[in-house]
Image 1 (cartoon, rainbow, N blue to C red):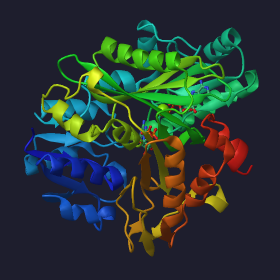
Image 2 (cartoon, rainbow, N blue to C red; image 1 turned 90 degrees about the vertical axis):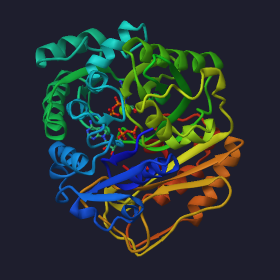
Image 3 (spheres, protein in one colour; image 1 turned 60 degrees about the vertical axis):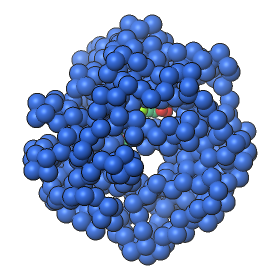
Image 4 (cartoon, rainbow, N blue to C red; image 1 turned 120 degrees about the vertical axis):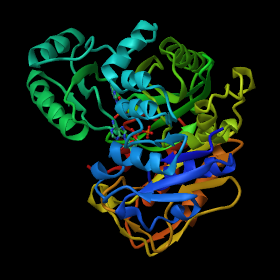
Length: 448
Ligand code: ADP
Ligand code: ADP
Ligand code: MG
């Protein structure tokens, strides 16, 4: 195992990785920006290094600053968390050339999967169903129009470098397609510095079901079951659960097998997720691979009893997978609510500020992953995620009941949050039945 690991992230995931390191007796080096100098988790690190001002381009996204910190602190490895540099193949490459282990897949895999059009081609090559769409990227309007004619409207224009639900446009006809191509390209260029686009047929009201995978450097790949992430707002996940509550046995098996097959065919290493959408008839289609730890990883940890971040560290340090596929047993039901600093009365606009009171829930079956405390000021520069409430119970009905009371216990004052939305989701009868799709929030719980 490593002696010393640098955590190149902030917020709840920085604390999550720090905890795994400490339990493995690995020393931690936490880097932070000026805007995060009051972060309480910094106290638990063996060493802390300021890597620049609040603006992430000059701190959490600055490869030179992070590599310098890693060299000064003499670490063996870097954990990138999610977001920021987690899916930056150039960063993974520089780590390698600096003799620092990047805790994640190889630079080649990160690069291949980060290019969503390319990942689609790899999935097709592996014999996994993909959403009908462009073969590869589309270079101009003409090509886009030709693809639309072939697959039929409505179509979704997507950014190859996309993530976090950004860079996507729905088009119903030729005019909105041409406009959508320009809008998606501009958004993708601004957000990811890459305006490359591809197209998919729009699947109406799909469910989003994804499979967690783990692979070691000896070619062993296992899956840890699936998560249902269909509670979404603007293509971004809001609540996740595991296992998926309504999935025919054979479909579940095929999903797991497809994810492992794709991972094997590309030689995937470390932790990753294969994302699918399912249509009304439970036909599934690959959409993308996230070659990193995901926000919603705790629900899988709860139902499998496997600590995914510790597994990431073990795999990166050269260990074999600690479980065979047969040893992975799914038990019980877990739900996660993402608690964001957002204003429900202003279209869930991010809403930073001073948290005057923060009293998280507890009790049987409740886990709260958060870096927030009473007196903490949520910076305006970063993601609005305050933390996650995760519950784990033997059955889904019990998990729902526990989440309801956990949300009711949760006190957050001083800033606006999406707690009220979660409370309504947990009391909604469609959600209670367990079969809902990505249109659920908009149809039942969101205005406009
Ligand atoms: P998850 O499935 O882990 O929730 P998300 O797509 O919601 O994945 O992304 C998790 C975090 O990573 C969010 O903070 C999001 O803004 C960030 N993120 C995802 N993809 C990218 C990307 N390509 N570039 C920058 N940030 C990203
Ligand atoms: P990101 O990289 O931003 O996470 P994804 O490709 O994973 O982008 O898609 C995010 C979400 O957008 C999906 O979970 C789903 O709700 C929606 N989506 C993506 N592709 C399609 C599609 N072809 N049809 C309908 N919805 C889609
Ligand atoms: Mg996705």
